[in-house]
Image (cartoon, rainbow, N blue to C red):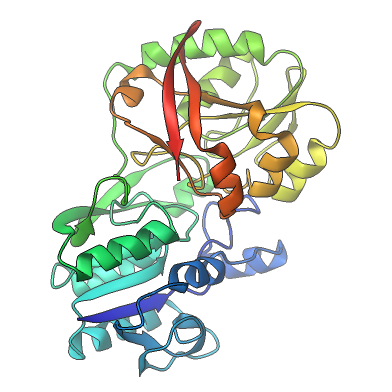
Length: 353
């Protein structure tokens, strides 16, 4: 079985610095953004079966991380066109699956070329990952690929989704379905796409009433999403919808901050982190809130994490997931946690990684 393997070398660079994507290369560079994809690619390739026949690209688009046949020569600066050309070459060379390291933008580029010809598997490294072809993390992705090669993974059609990045930068979430792709699937190895639930607004009101009392005093890192924004609204605070903010004693001290700004704001004193599961994948860390990095979580302490969510979403979520990029931290967070679902109500959910 031949496998096409491609890496988007700039994927994830905007996450920790508080950008809503990595497309604005100049802004990413100005703010010191570091791509996640090289680290994720290394994690994924560690322990790959030596018997695999891998087709890949030169240098930072694949050859740097894995031994295989180079079927596309990448330049020093790469664009989406390089990804698409590489995938055309994979198909010509007889690839039976394409594995990529990147985010939703990379998934869209590959889908434009591949459609439903052969399966696609995403290894998550982007700022936003709403498509349902992404593995839970690099390690699960490697295991899923092995299962696919052994005929143990079902291949089904999954959604290719992405947000309007311009609207995203302006604190507005518009998600669009771009098409369907084939992808290998195993339960708890691949994420689901974003879902919408009816009746959530009343549930958010109860959460907001309860949490607004808790968050009046002290320092809180407030993650993105409509549920957490409802808490801030109840407190009379103008929180960003899609950014990460820090509030102290009922007022904002960091608005739409990046990792370093958040770390500086919580230097000293107890800090709690308030997050809500992101999208249909039910990730509390590692999807859309990379600003709350492993460093931030360690500084605040894993015992100071508060998870809030509507009961509707929790009824559809057998587990919660974490993907901080720090395997030891993921292990430390794994286990049972109370999720606040209303005024004085909570459910127990298990975190896995």
